[in-house]
Image (cartoon, rainbow, N blue to C red; front, side, top):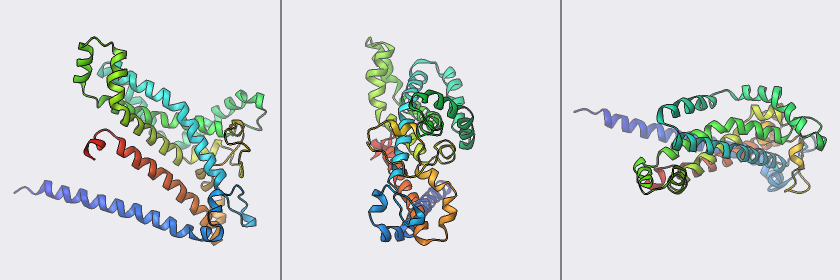
Length: 297
């Protein structure tokens, strides 16, 4: 009797269990290593706005703010373009031409982030500086620069996943809609988009997950300025200034400086814990929304 399917099933189960154990172990290790900072400052670590490690003060809120602002700018810039491109490839162009468009876009997702970062330094930073001249920026290293660069980086991911979600809508429903007299635009608006909506939201959330976790590209163009907490949360002025994100903070030299000080080290690990909680939450949410997953749940 052929036992290959049974062996493959148990291998799949075993590797899945190992992945879960590894993920929980990593989360537990981060939590354990960050405990000293919560004993030292409690909730002030997450709500404090001042980070001065020589004075023993660690406030992560400005970095959380910078991460969210940069990611929001990336989503606002990338989502309309990505969804428009996905609608074009899934609803308008024929299959062969669709692949000629989609494959190069998917290849862009594999470009190393350091390459995007260098292009941001060479091209985007100067462009943003010229655009922001009326606001008298100190340089082109701003939160806006980092957000626009991230938009370019997550666009292939969002577009590819959105295209897959739209193509998951049965072709028979499109043909039925066209047979009832709906135009191509009406079919996309009334048939494809409503059914693909959970997958489209999942695509945006996965793109946001990548934006939250990106390090080197953001590190090169965000300016890495600590304690940039805005006077008004809805003000756009911070976009024209240098800032700091969770990833750019952890990617800098302070991580090495912190290793000899238990509290300082715990503060840096705490940033990683906050980041991984954000990314895992978004990944789980997007996984639940993906086409097929909701129907099986």
